[in-house]
Image 1 (tube, one colour):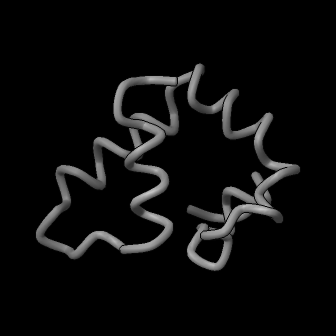
Image 2 (cartoon, helix red, strand yellow; image 1 turned 90 degrees about the vertical axis):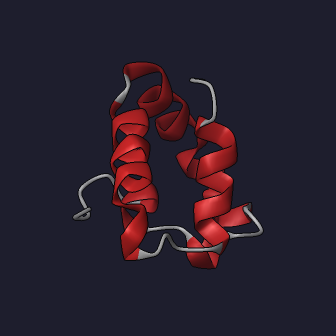
Amino acid sequence: MRRGAGALFYALTYLPLPPQHARLAAYFERLVAHPAVALTIEQARPFFQFYPGRDGLARRFFDPAAPG
């Protein structure tokens, strides 16, 4: 996985980014769009139901057809 993707993914499931961190949010979006990270998320999707921070996960991580 790309550097920082795992830590940022984990952090964002517990604390949403405030609006003043738009550049960090854009960086995260670029990370999750990267083929290696997208593959990791796709492979992890069946296990998100067991993830302790699942309540904070965006719907798109459970359902790839869900919007943003």
